[in-house]
Image: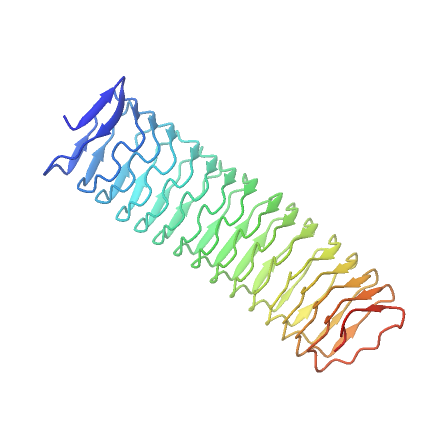
Length: 356
């Protein structure tokens, strides 16, 4: 027999010439690691209602199977279970799954739709990475965590609503998911580093009141981002958070910020209007470097330092109002601002060619 079953565990399946469909017998409680890996001649695999656990890589590279149906008896999936099944169109998941592990569907480039069961709490690292054809996915209200790079490179997803129960959105979760156009985010402690970095089609983002921080490069190089709502609850926006968002014309920042971090608006060439909220004390290095559309800016009282290269190559900048609290302007801070003429208090420390 092509199946090796030991103690109710299907340990291994060996391909048989001409066999394209397999039914796993009732009584099998688990499918072992890599049990069907690389069985490319199979077109259909039927699972019994006694299976509770499917091991890591069990059906990986089974490239002839277009649809998998998991019975509701399945409670646990290992990592990489369906990875690199390029021709797979979709899957029906068990209603009793609580977690999708690491790289479960990674590289399933032909998969177009996934319906995730209510009750699912966690999507693991790289779970849907490289699912280039994935267009539709529902995220159930029970979902609490999305792992790093979970949807990276899933190019076709256009809109996404994250459920209110989400508390953890890991770094690079949607890195390079270039088809995504709109995102509505629930309350999050932190939108983690590079969560939406390089999502080039992203146009609108809504962040819920109660969110605490926006991580490093969270929305960097979202070249079509033109509208974002940041609530007053946000107290920290990290380095490069909006770097390269060249279509962003304006942005309203919350009043609880204490610093504009390094490169936070680097090369936001479409930025025309900008108001620095009171309470900010430091403008970081490269904060507005290359913001060629920016014409004027008022730096509020309380700011003590303008970092190196902060406004370098802001070629349209004509007017800057400096506060009496200012103590230091870093090197080359206004270099390349050919339309700008600044008068600075002699007590302010100037870095190398700060006003050049």
